[in-house]
Length: 281
Figure 1 (tube, rainbow, N blue to C red):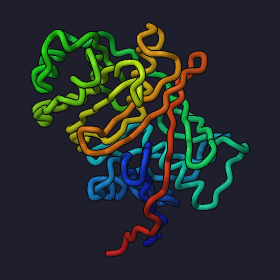
Figure 2: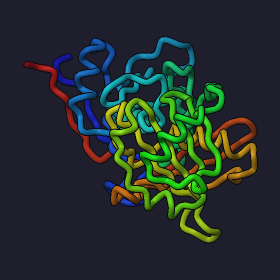
Figure 3: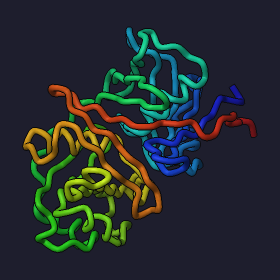
Figure 4: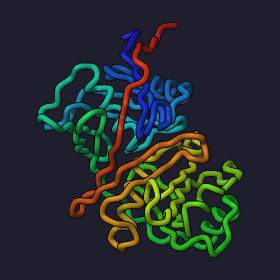
């Protein structure tokens, strides 16, 4: 157990090295919680997923998801990265064309598409009610937004919890230059629409300093939460695309699709680094 398979996966990259880098450790069933936490905080990746043997019937594997500073019940980036790494290691799913992941949020279904494309169906969101005015005002000031820039607010939580802000337009989202660490424990997702005919429908930025990530190059679980919020109100269409990472010099593209009550999140997911991680002193 001193050496384990280790991959770094590029999630939602429109071109190589343009998405979110997510580390995956396979065959991790004998790692302790402190060892997982130590690897996650040491890694330079956005998230680290640990693949373990399943404990539920029907699951292909179990996944534990870690941000740099804490474990979360569900992480979309780690879900897609772990599936890609598991498949690239030569594993075969129980059902052709689909993988079933077990995690703290339950069983998550992942569709294996052509090329490097993967899609997962998001777990349901928690209902945390309406954010209070003080919380929204703190976020607005830190992000440097005017009152009229914010069109709607809600809590978004299907794993890691975020304050969701719907912004007047994508250019306002891209232009923000916030002092992120003033958010404290608050995680914030900000999304605004592009004019019709743009490369994508929305621009998304997500800030989570309390999880050890000042700004995500791409966000999967948060994209699902925004869709679950906006599609039923017909603010967003049932299928659309989201660009993210622009402010970081990245070019991630997230594909969002709603099928009935299900939200599917996907895009290109490519292994970039394959090797081993050593646990020896």
